[in-house]
Image (cartoon, rainbow, N blue to C red):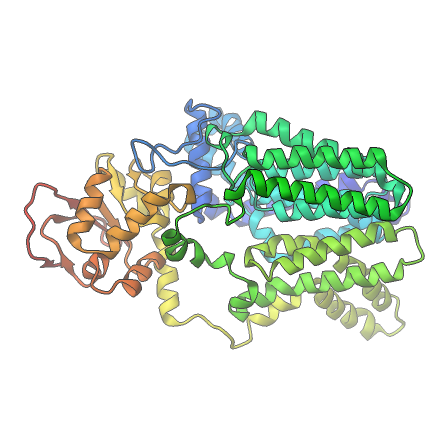
Length: 598
């Protein structure tokens, strides 16, 4: 059988083989990180704690983290969906290697599982729209998507990889020529993503708008619209019943609570009704779609006015001092060129490629597939102008358009009679259309290089998160430690101690308490720490969060501590010589005294 026919016939099997090779490679390449449980992000540490609590018998619908801000605990707004593969891997591996190693392996393997789905979704899209044998390029281009691939790397166990996998299935469904299958795929993928979290809610809304507009333009798309409406409503409802935590069963705006569940159920029902009516006149279908949209928007504004603002619903003070300063929530153009350029390059290429492919297919039936892909990838690219965190999704959705462009460019270079064009031209063409030139070029451009001070901060922030730095804290009896907000999840994941706060918006009062304690007077720090039952103080000098306290509040408690002014009621405790931490016992019985140099 010719190679082309084999690539087409066995594309799914070969894609899974390619995924297996990548799984082995990344596990080998990142083995050091897997061994040391290098959960670098606060959410990864909290995800592991959520899984541990589940395996220790905590209720399925109880997602409070009781080791943050004890004894009441910290409310986490996630669901159990992403916990399941991690917990399953731990249960499978634990009898053979023990719990610690089982956790290390599970955290290394679990993020790579949704990568298989993302690869299948992109491969299916490319083979439908570009060529039945072009799908291997989608895998190669995906590997080059640095921002996207970071979400699938070992130890990145939070939910972003699974949501990106659902996004890959969404674009595959939009491009699927089989209307019922395509609509169901988009509906189910959107429902799963929303049950995991609302981060990709704008993409789910855009996918629904694209399917509705296709029906407005072409009445024969009613089948796609009807099954999409049913699967979106039904999938959201089933997911809510199975996975919504106790805390998510109230009218909150930051998760699939009854607020957004009602939107999905009513919206899905209205779309199903529109598809069933499906009048012949295009203007009538457009009118019905606009009326349905107005009913959903108007009903939402009338019934849930509290959700018209930012979904986190934090206090103005917490928004000003914390949430508004999250770097990934800023537009891409507000980030340094060195970071922004490699992220935006492929989305721009993908949009141009999808636009060119749409124009080329204007007289062909495949236009029905390229138009929604062009709309979806353009929307994802524009999302970067809102928040830089849209980078992984924008890169992933750019792959089909980039492959379409590569299929033309590389086809020309490889068939050229000039050997120089065939060799050098193919290499240059590949680097150009894949966007990989951006990452290579940025290494040699003397732009936005980190300052020595930035390197100091990055080094301190990294060292304080390591297991070897944390483990010596276990020499002291388990107790509540007052520390930085960003250290809280890592502290409870790697030691037997409790912490006061973590960076989770539903617990804004505890976050503000930590900020106030480090920013105000030493006496106020001791009062706040006592209120939280903290008996130890742990600081990481030069960690990013510490620099904020010093910059904003010169002369405040942490600034004094950093300059060696230690209150008499703080007793320094020994740690290993090379420890990046400073540890103190908080003595509440000691009388207030003048600070001592430390």
